[in-house]
Each structure stands twice: as structure tokens, then as C-alpha cells.
Length: 574
Image (cartoon, helix red, strand yellow):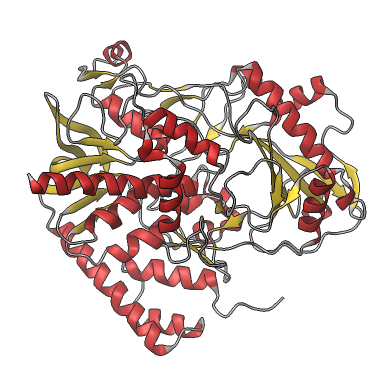
């Protein structure tokens, strides 16, 4: 295999270290040149990194009590808002992040080992309550505790979803969230290696590309799906409808295997701005609300409580689990639940923390006759979509392949491949609830997986299709045997799902936007009943899209930035 021009891991390590003062300017330049950059380019990058590092050090040393905008959370959406709200230099922006800034770690830089973050210092470490319909298992619920949030610890799958997903958003929250608006903002986000199209972006912030499709397992996956009636699509992100297509999913990883997280693309380039302050390793314990106005936030800075005021708005970007937590700690949520912990009720909002839903994922293992070719890129081996009922507007099933079979007992990883069915449009809904008024207490996370019979039926169909693909003609020259539940009937499939299915790490819906007065946030993402407060992250999705949620979250955040800036313009005019 041809060696890439730049060593991606080394480049990311150098950039991450330089931006936060963990490497000298000389070492940075030397490292970049060794990785393939010209001396001039390396010097330009060193100057930008040094400026950002010194600027942020000065701003942290001289924290103000008041900013125009305060963003809670520097996860994927928070990074977008930080970039866009500080871009024209007219407003001061404070971004408060509970995690750290050390992106210079193998487990973050290399998307192939993303799971090494789970349960470590870069994961908030949440777990579900025992799941009644999954044999009472406790399911880990990873949430990124690092700038970039989930975009810094995920598997870098880059998918936009189906038009039907955003038709559902528009039905719930109005024309701000139509497919056309979403596509326009996808294009603003994306810098696709294949160039711009009607749907795809060619000059956006996040570099994306298609992994290799010539690996034997990838071709076998696609050929097997085609043999089952799926249509091969050269670019699964360049079509409005995903039903019954098969192809290769994209990744937000450069050709030299550099993860391009929201922190890398949106936040780091903005850190040299004089109007942006990033305050990491700082916990926002509650919102500062007086009457019906959100005046700012209260945070723990170096062990001391400190109040920061927001002249214009506070924008909560803490994610599907932590955004409802902060609202509830601040008195916005189900009144009876808040009173249980002695929290004064600011706004009785029963739907805050409700509507929690997530994708479910399970692995099917197949053994091979001979060792597989080494994995390439991130190890993904094709993707297909399926609609289990003709009554559905779009697909509710996603299945993707993997080039090897890691972490399977008694099977070397290169002696197997996987098909991995996902339940993408679950009917089951759960909750996020407080366990205490103490901000450091664990959350009660209950996704209520597999509770609805519709989910049981759809997931059985998903596993059946994934089994058929793994046993399909494309794999005939490769496959030795099916390892997972060979010859299983419906009852055995259901038992397998209950014993093995887990989260796909896509928690949404807990502060759902909507036109209905019962929705926690309105069509412009403003929290109902509290002025100058918005939520802008995956928690506002009223219905989960049929794809991995990273790219939709960034697009949503771009749309949120437009709404905030439009409101600022109106306010300035008045």
C-alpha cells in the first residue's frame, strides 16, 4: 500500500499539542517538515498555533464577568456555535467545557481505536438503568468529555440521512428544519473529497471522503446486498432517498488518516480571535435565571463558584444527556421530579428529559476460510438501508459491514467479518432524570430499549437481512461459516438481540424542538418560558434520523447559528 504523503496521526498530534502549548515552536515546525509539509507552510501553521495559544492563555488569566454569548459545552454543536458567533468579531463569546483540551492522544487521533475512550478520562462515563427488555442489562452510554465531544471519540462515520427524516423535523418544528435547509447546511459543513454537488459540499469545514471499496469484504458486502435486491449507489450521501440502496459510507478522516473532529475544524481555527474565550475543565452547575430571564450561568472555576453574565443569550450545547440535566438542575423540567430533590421550579416542562431515543446495534460474526486482507481506512465494509414496512416514509434499518471481526472469542480478528444491523427509527422512548440535586451525581439514563413491539418486529427483520447479506453470494468464496446464531428462527433472534444489542451512541430528543406548546424548545430553539436561552444540539431532534448523528448534529448547529445571528441582527436594528 502506498504510504500517504503526510503521516496523519503525527500531524494531528503536533497540531493538537501546539495549540495548547504542549510543544515548542521549533519542535512543531521540525515535526511538520518531517511529516511532509514545506518549511513555509510549517512556519505559517506554527505562527497561527502560537497566536491561539498565547491569546487563550491571556483570556483565561483575565476572565470577564460578562460576555455577549455564553455557550455551554464545546462538543460538536458547541464548536460550530463558537466559530460562527465569533466570526465577525462583533460579539464576545465564552465557551465553557467540562472536559479537557488534550486531543493529542492515540485514542482520539486514531479513529480505528475510538472505543478506547469509553470509560476513561475522555468519557463522562454514563450508564443506563437496567434495561427491562434487554435482559436487565446495564448499557454503557459514552459521551465525549473533551473539546469536540462525540466528534473527538466517535467512529467518524459520515452520513446525512434520508429526506423523510427531515420531513419529520419540518412537520414537528416548521420550515426552519426542512430538507432543503438541512442540505444547505450540510454543504456549509462538508468539504467532500469528491467535490460539490446539489447535495454535497466541496468547500466546508469538515474534510470527508469515501473509504476504499476494493477490499474483498467490501465488494462482497455490496455484491451480496445487490443479489438481495438492493441498488448499488456510488455515493450514498448524494441521494435524497436511501431506501434499498447499498454502497460505501463516508468518513470524516483525511487520506492520511487524520480524524477531522468539530474541534479541529471549527474550534481550533477560532482560538486566535480576540473575542472568543475557551474555558475548559469547568463545570456549569446551573443557569442563572431570574423571573423569566436567563441572565447567565454559574460555574465551578478552579474549585470556586463563579457567575458569568450573558448580555444576549446562553446557548446550551451539552448534548442529548447533559442538556436536559442542566435545564432540570436550573428548575426547568417536570415540576414533580424537580421538587423531589428540592429544586425550585422555574418552568414546569414535563417533556424536558423525555423522548429519549437512540439507535440500537448488534454484531453478527462470520468466520472465513483463510485470513482476510488487512483492514483499510477505518475498517468499514459497505452500508445498506432497508424499509421493513411499506407504510414507512423512509428506511428504518441500517446494516453495515466490517472488514474483520475484532474481539470475538476463539476467532482471530483476521479470520472473520461482521454484518452489523442497526434499528434506526425506534418507536420506544425513554427518559433522562436526575438522581440528585448535586450536579456531580450520576444521571438516571433509561432509553427503554426494545419496549415497543414495533421495534421487536423491525429489528428481527434487520437481523434477518444482515444474516442474508453475510451468507450472500458475494461472500461465497470467503465465508467458512456463520458464527452468530446460525439457522436461528424468530424466537432465537429476539433472544440474541436481548442478550447482545447495545447503544449506537446516538442519544437524542430530550429537549425536542417543536411548534406544539408542549415542546421544550420552539422552532427557533428557544426554551419555552425562559427568555435569552436556547438549546442547540442533538437533544433538540424531535425524531432521530436513520443515520449516524454526527453530520446531522453539525448541520443542525449551523442552522442554529443562523437563527441566533438573525435574532442578533433584529435586536441591533431595534
